[in-house]
Image (cartoon, rainbow, N blue to C red; front, side):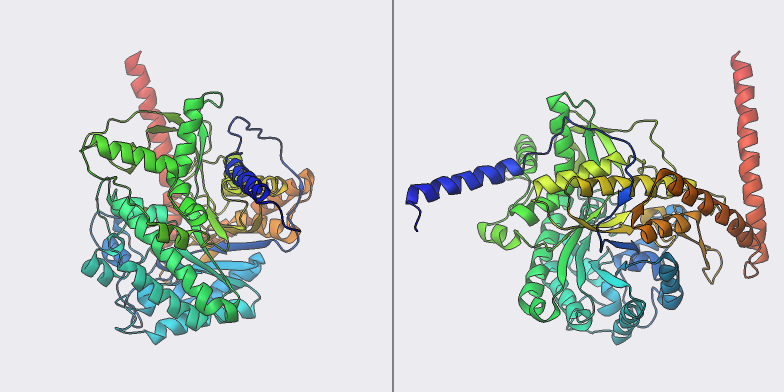
Length: 571
């Protein structure tokens, strides 16, 4: 029974219309926060925690490891808070068994970590040298995880590019990175792919591009304003696609794993949901952030709004071509569909409104290209990093946006969590308990909305090196005492709370969940005393434990007295 040709044509047009409308059915005008939802996650939902090589391993120059751009960047004075470095960090390189016992205590289903490219290939180039001791370390880690029934989820690039590739070629500014990265990935598939079934090509390429090559806040610290970020991203997208195809053609048949990417998706909410200009600005914010990478991977090309805005501003600057590079038709079809699952790293939300930026030659950069202003609500909790406000409802909005824009892909939340910025040692992290409770609950609501979320990764297992913030911010479920050369770990209250969410696979009822919180906080009060009396802790650290809280209290008192004095003078 052959359909008449015109009917086929009509079907084709209908399908096109359906596809187009499906990509546009996210409703910006409805934002019902709703109350807390008690219920469970689907059976088989995977609970985990994460970390990354440079942030946790230490052993920066041990056992044949080559230099990474972060080794070099952090050794430059003034680049990192208090000139901290990741030279030792958590010493995770030497603490595989200890850290896996912490994961077992949490009852994790998966652990997300990254492989250090220069630990395996010291110059970044496979034909130069493969460092077998680096291979052994990751073998040891993977095998121990599997022995303990913890699934490894492995990131291939978590920002630690081999320094040689930066010096020789200019790093991600250079198209040659695509082949070098593919060779490295292929080596990982060859050596670890019999046991690793979840691969993430890149972690948060937005940061690599913008902070590495536009603002210079991150390694390699280049400030190529208006062009650097776009060029780096272009090469990263091509590298991701190439690695996906390598796995697809050479390894998938025998290894049967999945290859995805982890994108950072911060949500942008219109200041006024009844104002079309604000809605357009909010959508632009999300398209310039998440869509920059997701749209090529799912649809084959950059978001139209990026092409329009950057193209127009490039013309206004008197440039012959757009500062946003273009993909050829062949590249578009090669890149489209190179995602078995989408990793989402999400932490916070902004309110967005329209704001016109002048397009002079000197003022052009990624941020001004967007023509928008970011705002925060002063009532939003802000316990740690200055950029990280707790806005749980933004998480559900983002997940629903991904569902409608990209055809409801399989999603793993690859990072979600909150930091603290404190001088005083504090294991009673109630704000983190509230953050996890509310964000995980919004994810549960998104699953009820039909979003295909398969797993969740708390960020992070341990306190660790936080890039340009050094050790001044702590994201860990476990506290790490960095001043002690043994880097001992101590559970914060959030460990007990997260463990109960995992055991129940969700939230039973209000009384029970409140009970979890109360019990978690009771255990941390006694742990706090233990930490202060740890026999391994040196005399100096004991003094700090006692003196720092006293200094904190004194500072508050002095500030209050000073304020009273100022007020009195004013009166």
